[in-house]
Amino acid sequence: MTTITRVPEIGLSRTIPDFDERAIAKRVGLVVLATDHTSEADYARMVASDSIGVFTSRVPYANPVTAENLAKMQPKLTEAAGLILPEEDLDVVCYSCTSASVTIGDEAVTAAVQAAKPGVTVVTPPLAAARGLKALGVSRLSMLTPYTLETSRPMAGYFADAGFDVVSLTCLGLDDDRVMARITAASLKQAAREAMAEGADGLFISCTALRSASVIAEIEEDLGVPVVSSNQASAWMCLRLLGEEAAKPEYGRLMTLALPDEIDDGRINHESRKGDA
Image (cartoon, rainbow, N blue to C red; front, side, top):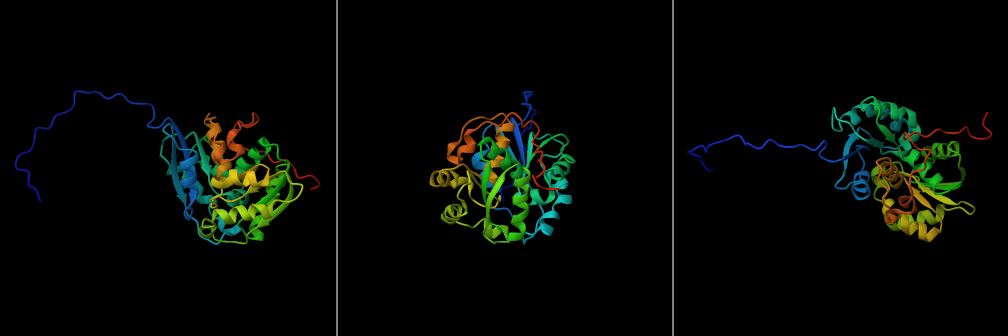
């Protein structure tokens, strides 16, 4: 160990620093599950840049993926959102869990996040996917999820309530998001082919755990219809809400489109499902 026998003269710089308003111009908050392997990497590729910072917090979560376990995250969302740059504003916050957003509800997710970040625009993957599918002109929808039947059914109801004719719903029967994250690209492409029903004009691939964003363009070329995935859709919506309009066709057709004019606050108003009392 080196011993300093003489302390050098220490002086205060005469330079008075100038400061930018923010270290990074635009701020995206990302709340992910404690078990999430995928969302941060997808946002690093699709959203983050020299002018956009993605700041992440994790919310406690334990498998299996059931309605009960998904709902348990709701009271913890406020604390998780509050840990992202405490006492500083964010431009938009995404809660990166599709099935939990459906289970808890977009309005309840928004309220929980805004309790920590008042007034911030809140994006959820199903909200963004519904908006994206409409922007793409999709009306008759096939759906692919990695979940069990029980977890998948409410997903179909969400999109039916949003005005889509859900032609088919295919699920892989998994109940651990860590396993879902390990599904290979080849398997995702094969499952997408099998999930696409005759008469449907678009496909939604649900779940932020799936590594589907990077192969969406390939799936679209294979199927010949627009394809939207959870992380791709929420990334698109966050970018457009920030005023970032650059096309990124390598992540699918949606990433070439503007945000429709009717989106002004990051919320989705579900229409009553036709035929319901």
